[in-house]
Length: 235
Image (cartoon, rainbow, N blue to C red; front, side, top):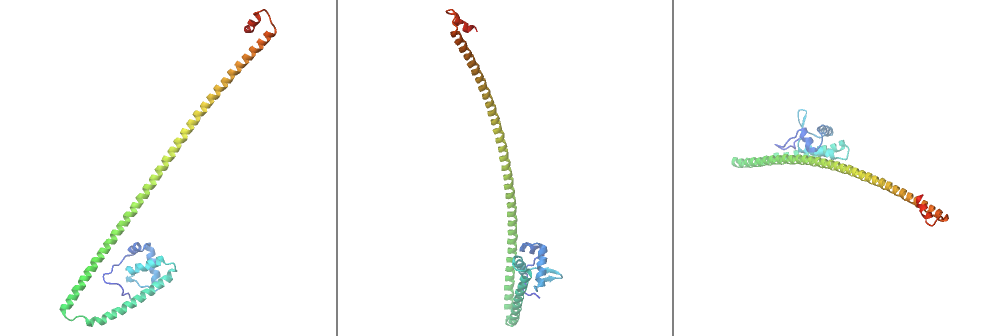
């Protein structure tokens, strides 16, 4: 039977053990069965296990082991057995020393007062530790919430930035297409004007060429003194 549990030592429920060890509640029951199967002893109330800090440390050792669970459980059970045997020897030594207790009631009263004072200080320390743990859990919860809010804000900001980039890209494409269409219209207009200019030049060239031919013919068939010149312009 276990005798290593101190008076007023805090006990934990399966749910609290799961939170302390960082494992699921069903895993607490599974690890407990493995430990018991290999000789580990739990303090029990009926069929319900009552966990103390050393039990939580054993569960964490199972959680973090690289060896088979049964092998680690055997090691933990052996360590517990050695510790319990050491506690038995200490109790025997303490029992043998009862004869040395002071028999004077006043001395005994002083000793009891001292023990009561130490017990009160220990209780106060335990309360402070529990309060510190509660505050630490609250701080961790707050940090997790802050992390969630920060992640959410970053995600929303990234989505908004992406939407703005897509909108600007769309506007840029529309602007580019508009400029391209304008340049196309300008090019078509210039091509048309160039074609008109070419046709005008061609007409001018044909007209000049025709005039030169008529002038040449008129020179080759001379008439009266001035008539051959005017005949060119009459045609």
